[in-house]
Length: 251
Image: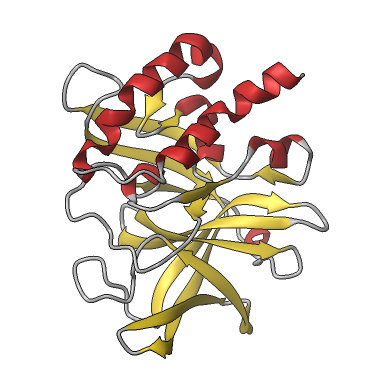
């Protein structure tokens, strides 16, 4: 049992530790990891399946369960290197949903990966990406994103992000943003913007659930990108089960 569990944990531990590194050239983040990924694939290909943007197709739903371990005004990279749902799309240490959480019955994954479309720059399956998108069937709920700053030092204010869902304007769910959403620019989201919670993990009676925070970039084609994550206790759990699952594309 111990050996099997250590295999389950191997990639999550690698991703978490790798995310703490500061590379001279951020664009090298994925190529620099390719050797480790190839080694893992040699031993766990049957269980993990295809390597996709720092994640594995066989565990992809669980691999979506990451958030920034410590947010300190991180900018979204100017040059694309990985899809927004991948931890490789950020330049900051991450916290990742651990397999033990699910193995011990503390929560269950409710989202389903429908298909994966991955185009590579070259022939190396562990190398640079041209484009990647996945289709996911999941509970989706509309919400409004708000944020405000608490000025501790004028040159470096502390930002607080939260969402309110349509089920209760009195309930505020704390957000873990993937980047400095408040900063003007290409990826800026004004306070008061419409966003969506995509449920990934539904907690048991006493434990937490986990949703991805998404923005819609093409309404007709149901294409979304990730902008953060939301954790909540079951008492705060959004009313996602009342709607029915929606199949969306994440890029």
